Image 1 (tube, rainbow, N blue to C red):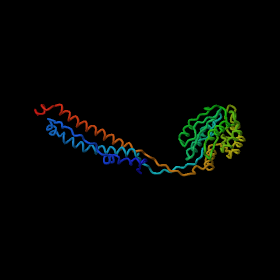
Image 2: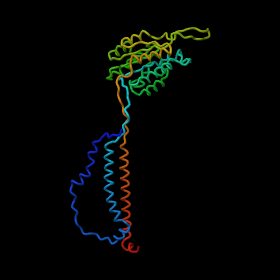
Image 3: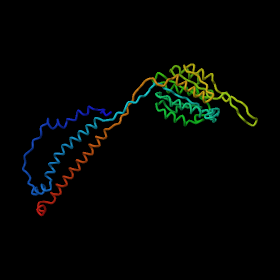
Image 4: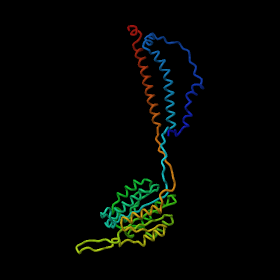
Length: 344
């Protein structure tokens, strides 16, 4: 659909006509005429008729340029079809553990063993892609917690930061309390009614300045709901020089603390022992925190003012060239003088 964003600009369109018809023309002083001895030569070259035609066309040029300039000032634009967008109003932060224990390869993707962080990236990435309408941010934590991606509707950017995360990037230990505290700090100033933190870890709080339970109390006061996910298999077969033996690679996982953090903030604790359970957890989170609440519509707008503006500029240049051509013709004839004119 074509429209003008500032149609009031067309109110100035009649100004040249008002100026011409309302203001009285200046009195023309009668003076002695200048006799041009080579007037017939000018007439033979068509300068007289060309000057008359030029004066006739000049007014049309100027009026057309004025109309184009006013049209550009009205800011014409093309408005596209309405595109429906869902906006939930939810601020959702994801906190991912990058401690050294996340390199344990006790998950399988397509029958191939992968480390815990790779499994978390694969499943959490699909979850982010489904969160249409949420503002999503990313916190990475190890010895300390870092805000890798602030809250944004740009899910692709968050996905990129998640894919680029590497084990040990934030240190070898696990600062769960600091990650929760950072989430509370980043969400405290936001007016959103729904604030959600999804925290994924495979261990216990071994670093940081804030205990997880105290951080959970701060989160509860700020209406921050926390969903905690404990990741890691319960049993794993290790083959060494003495043969095969079964171990629990998740022995360091502090499930009691994770469960307490979730309970105090109105969230839930989940246990992911394999890739299937991890996928089901994120699907369940989609149900617990539904994506779309309100409907908004967006129309793409393409500015078109440069077209009439460019055409007006082109006409001005053409007008100047025509005027310069007429002036050069007159000057050439004047420079020849009456004596040279008679020799023709």
